[in-house]
Length: 431
Image (cartoon, rainbow, N blue to C red; front, side):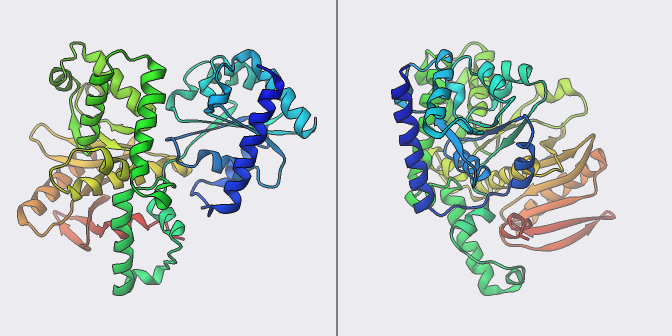
């Protein structure tokens, strides 16, 4: 590819970024920025993955604030035909435009170019590099082998409720947690957040953007990338899985429903949706790994706005939306912080189930139920009995029920169960 053509793309993309930073409100994300910058002080590569349009490019720009850096986004039709042999030409273009002393580079969606790993491995020895990608398998190939541990991966999700409030310029203080008026306002924001989701662009353009993001991922990141032949079956299955958010799924049953003979094809389709950050698949917790992977999974959407845009729903499903929102925030907390943990669901052979079992190291450290309301006696008994059974089996006494509005502490069988409204739990990271 000609160097002049690459230069034009570089300059145009830089101008677009500069205009964005001038005109848009930039929200500080909840990742530890100092930790990420400190990591870049060494000859390592920072890899930012996450859904399309979740703010990965913006985060990368913020990391190099005040420094001269080169930026190239490969999700650009003008770079069609760019190959591994053109990387050095691109490097020369950067040097011609910005000088030989440029030390920092950001490469967006670089996984679009086959053979990119060797170029990054060579460049990272003398430069600070951030690469972004909307595929969770970005590091599953040659890059991880070549870097041999000299990289850090950060996953960026759509806005949390806390970040959403910042974007809305809603100033909420800890003392507001006790104000009836402010709690009403917080719940008003929460209802909007659960409806439109946390993609940054939805705050400007509305929930319709989530549907556009979904279609882009299906078309660009899955159908084209994986060369799926039966496109209609895949789309139908994808819509089915999204519509069954916060529910158990069984690959064999899905295969029969969509006339897909090979269950491995169904599993592959689900993996494509997961690795492209459209859904999150949660495994059942079991100390027996073989049983864990052979049982039914639970599926969640990457964003509640996306779920609301795509899912076929005959009712409002507030409880399932709440559960999806809790799962997403658990994933943020587990991936953003230093105190890493994993999330599973739990059930027994009698049908008792706990929505989330939080595992740190070899221990389950918290059990969480999500329920819109506990006013119904049967519902309350079911949720509590399941928690107590799981508590005994998994030896975990940190028990929590998240509801729409109720707050209390229940003491049963020598154990305490905290009940907390969703808004308060989502804001529990507020400084």
